[in-house]
Length: 388
Image 1 (cartoon, rainbow, N blue to C red):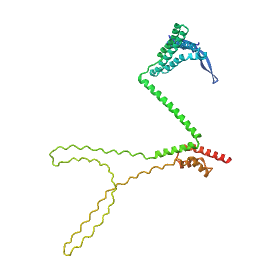
Image 2 (cartoon, helix red, strand yellow; image 1 turned 30 degrees about the horizontal axis):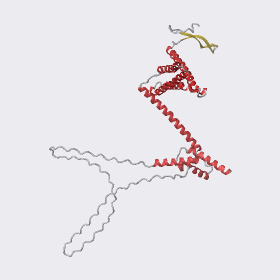
Image 3 (cartoon, one colour; image 1 turned 90 degrees about the horizontal axis):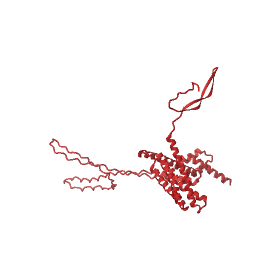
């Protein structure tokens, strides 16, 4: 290595020789030419991670223990069931117990930061482990080797214990607040995924029904649209009137010597509106003429006619809004309007036909898609009918 490529090394750091490349440019008569030149360099070597190395080692040991335990449990339970069922099925059934507690270990690993969710998998794993141990012990008893069966059963305990310690090394217990935050975020993500899947499924079903539903689907859609429009046009129920608050009576004024005592004025409560019945019209006849008096006698003034009683004011009647007009359930459908428009003008454009349907049945965004499709279906039926 030349002096130009010599690197400055830090004392105490290990280096290793590597092959590197660099670009060199040669210029002749103003024309550059670039080429890639290899050279030897040195790069620092990171220190060995003993913790990571040891963790990998114990993981390999746990995997080895598990393989031996699965093989022993499968052979033992398969030997017990071999007289009952074929050998392939017997040894397949023999692997169920060992695989079951390994399955629970996987669930426990996925929930290593949530002890409450991992607890059911932990309990189920120990239960399946006891079943596997019982199978090995029972197989030793059938061969008149109880000690061998007992020690063989504890192989599963060793494998399970190795994984239990390894999971405790990886498990990170979370604080109550952090655990609640994580659970809240998981619920939000799961809710979005579930809602998105439901909406997607509903959209697929709606598109399929619009495509193949036919006249029955259009009739049902028209009925539901009419009912919804009628429900939306109903007047809102009147709110119950709130009684006006009654002012509390003012305390009696103190007796003082004053030139002109004043009397406190208490505001009277607002009277509640009283509905008055209509006053019947009363006809009053005019009084008869007074009798004539003899000459020379005093002339008496005629008696005043009784005044007609004043009529009480009648409040104006409140007009009740007329109920909205409802269309009949079997009323004209969009397909009927389209057929009538095509019968009047077979060459009518789709835009004019959509405008005609909007005038008869009201504005609807779906008409842009459903009206041309319904027109094509009606025209196809007419062509087939003429051809037949």
